[in-house]
Length: 307
Image 1 (cartoon, rainbow, N blue to C red):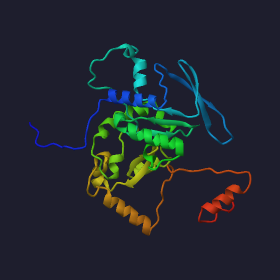
Image 2 (image 1 turned 135 degrees about the vertical axis):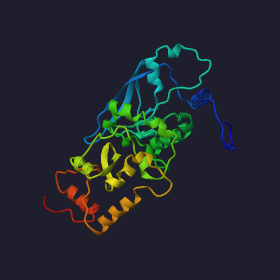
Image 3 (image 1 turned 60 degrees about the vertical axis):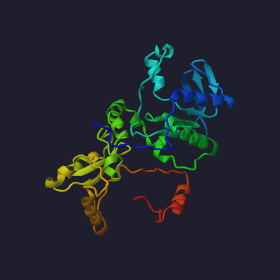
Image 4 (image 1 turned 45 degrees about the vertical axis):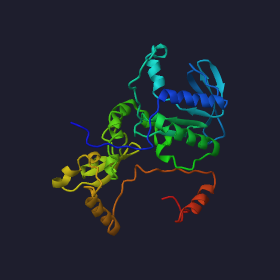
């Protein structure tokens, strides 16, 4: 075996992560930042705001005392937990580090933005082993979010609000995180099938799930909900749709003609769609303000009797 070809990028480079981190720290100190070492955050302090608003961060309880703050940024990774498990690490000397432990999020993407539960609590974590490469961009956009309330680039694909409480289930995390590292380096096909996961499934299903599955539904997953994508053809063709997560292609997907047939049926005939997994809002008011708002928002007449 020998190398037949290679890829050379004239602008590519590599850095020593330790030296880079120390350089960042020195530049921050020069700008007036105070860095405190051997200090662990034990609790986040919040205060209640007006009715209907989330609690607001006010500070934190640390191993060296209370710290007041108006804005809190959680930029920690898995290393803090590694140190807690192996208490000898902070005192150990390391002459050479060949590799280190990586951590992964349930979908292999970064986690950042402001928390939905606590105002002014920002997260910039879960870099899936790419922390050094992402550091500059993450710092820039977190600063823009804090200072301006938004950024000039959509951060929705990495927004923390894509996760729910059900995603903290330990069994789900153990199953899903076995699959994520392999997807980090897999080909990113344009077909939808490659975005499906084989692990951590059936967190939430609708009452119609058994019937739809019995009818041959091929399922995808959105926010833990099993959502029918299309219905498999007869028994002779079902084997082509057994594992959609392995059916990536740059050409026409195997399920294209099946979906085309269903689309035409919906367009020209009648279809029943299970919308259990879709977002729903409950709007209430003590007077007509909700009705008036919906009348303005919606195309159809909302001011009708219940039923």
